Length: 102
Image 1: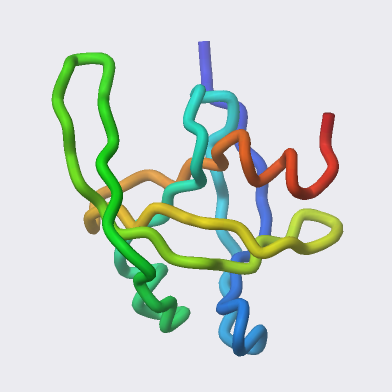
Image 2 (image 1 turned 30 degrees about the vertical axis):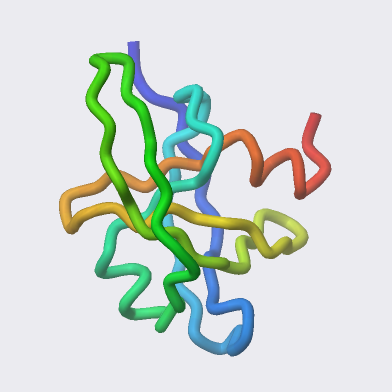
C-alpha cells in the first residue's frame, strides 16, 4: 500500500513571492502540517514558538512552529511544524480544514 500525496505551494505569509512547490503526504493522522527545516529557511519563515509533540511510541519531542501560507486551489495561513532536515512534508488535518475541504 502506498502513500497519498498532494502537490501544493507553500509561501511566506508576509512575503508571498517567497514560495516553493512541495509534495505533501496526506492522511497520516497528523494535526499540523510538517515541513523540513530547509524549506522553512528558504522561505524565511519566522519561528513563533516551540511545541511538544507526543508520538505513538511514547517519545516526546519539541519542534518549532511557524506561520506559512499554503495554497491548494485557494490559500490559507496555517501553523506548520518545522522538522529536521530529513523530515518528510506532511499535510496535517488542520490545513485542509482551513482550506474548506471536507
